[in-house]
Image (cartoon, rainbow, N blue to C red; front, side, top):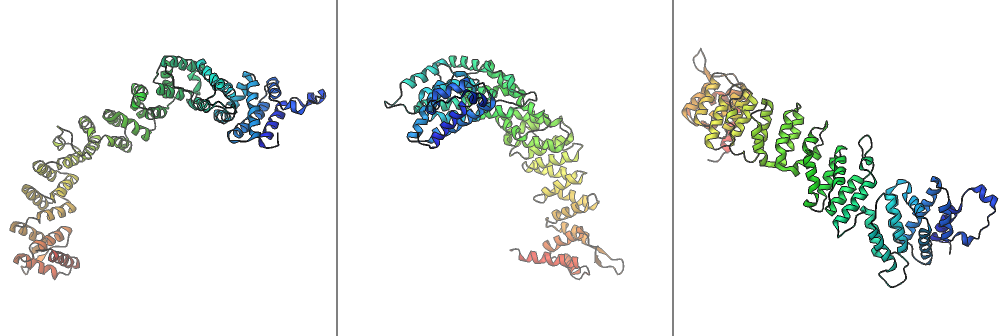
Length: 535
């Protein structure tokens, strides 16, 4: 063999395998022939006979990993020589020794990489030996039928030429075994027995550490295989229970969502439903909103009453808002559940639930906000008014009137805001009455004056003039009232609607001659704006 990388790797493995106790080697004076020492049978015998020591095994495993990587891509006569020697080495090693080496210190990723790499460049017989040893190292059981099938492939390759490397079919089997230790089986009952046997080899309870953190992937793997083959049983349910108790609801939900079909993942989802998955997540000290959102989307409308009930016992308004946000994907379907929950709750929650209803495109059938117009909490009354304002002309007019009559400025503001678009005639009189009697604050009075000023009648003009001018005692002549937001609003409405009216013209002239710059500016701006309007 020429001294290429393949040759160097094999010589390195042989030397590492033959080195035992240095002192005993020196005293024995063993001067074995180099060619004999490099023979696979000699190397295998040395590895078998060596006492199992961690350091020794690690060196051997290190060379095996490098050789596996080399076999994956190497070509030529030197690579073929390495392939023959490794295949003979695998066949010559005792099964227990090969299993021990393939444990690879418990590193599953490293073991599986070696198996995939090696299967690309060894004979079919060696692949069968690796499958058998790897199954033991993985703690899995490969059926005798499978091993017999691989053995037949070993003796009857697909091509008639010499078998220098593993048949592609065998390599594919190795890849699938290493990926998830699952095979297509035309006999589900037989596969279920193999699955139960595999499950009993390593107890699920042992895969969960004392602090509830999974240390192995066996429960997940078992459930995944069960989903793929459609075979559920006590062991699979036990695996689901253990994952649920360990708090791995996200993992179980992943398995459901990644199942090949809805029917395949249905048993796991049914298990989660039986465990009251949503209630369980809501009872945790810290809410996982992302996971809750996934569960709510799968549950659909049935999640609405559960979320709303959970909100009743949450004292923090921000936390309740987070729960309400989870209802958004349900849309208008959540309306009936929200409406049903309102009557029995405290005013704060009633207001929040009315706000939720206002976000829907359509209110639930049979719901009416009228009964909340008389609520003791003004914020509840305000939200009820907003909902009623979404109705037709009659309902809208009634809502405006009820709001304008309210003794809370926040409710009145909602009514005035709606009245700016269209106010029923009784509402105009009510606004004038409340302004005249000083029942509203300055902002609301200003809003009311602008609403009344939209009514272009002589009665309205008289009312507005009274807000702008008064009569001086001596000499008796009209004079402007003090400049206030209400006075300026009335002056603006007079200038906009009655600029050419004789009574209005006299007042506007006083305003233009006023010493108050704000009064003069108000008239000037209003007239400029009015002159620019068409017609």
